[in-house]
Image 1 (tube, rainbow, N blue to C red):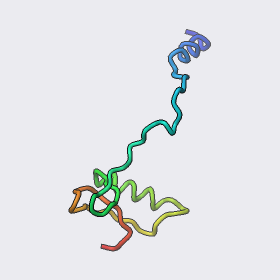
Image 2: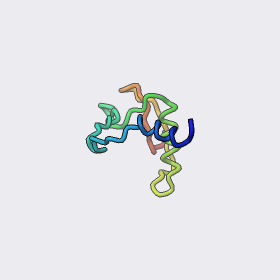
Image 3: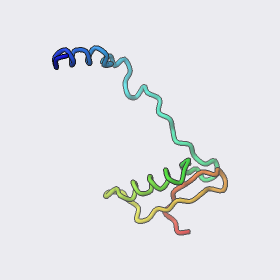
Length: 83
C-alpha cells in the first residue's frame, strides 16, 4: 500500500466527530479520608511518586513532603509536618 492510500485508510477510522466538549466529561474526584479530609493514595508507590513530583515543582514546591499510612482509612497520605 502506498503512503497516500495508507493515510487515507488511517483517517477513515480516526474519530473526528467531537460531539462532546472537555467540560462535559465527568472527571473522577480523588477519594478523601473521612477523618482528616486528605486525599487517599491507594499505594505507597503512588504516594511517593506524587510527593516526588510535587517537590520537583520549582514554583510551588514544599521543602519536604513525607508519606504515612492512615490509621483511619488505611490509605496513604502526604504531609509536610515532621513525624
